[in-house]
Length: 64
Image (cartoon, rainbow, N blue to C red; front, side, top):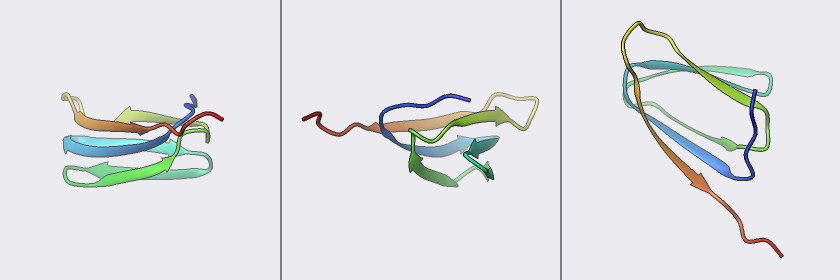
């Protein structure tokens, strides 16, 4: 499990990917997306034997 100091947006371009975010499990396929608080422990896993392509965007806030 990992964390980041950002909100995260994931868009599945190709393949099937499982994301575990906290206690929730999401199985995503081509065209699906996920948005979550990266401070929550999370991890991903490719569900196929072929490469997956995922667009990842991080939204960092300003530090005071």
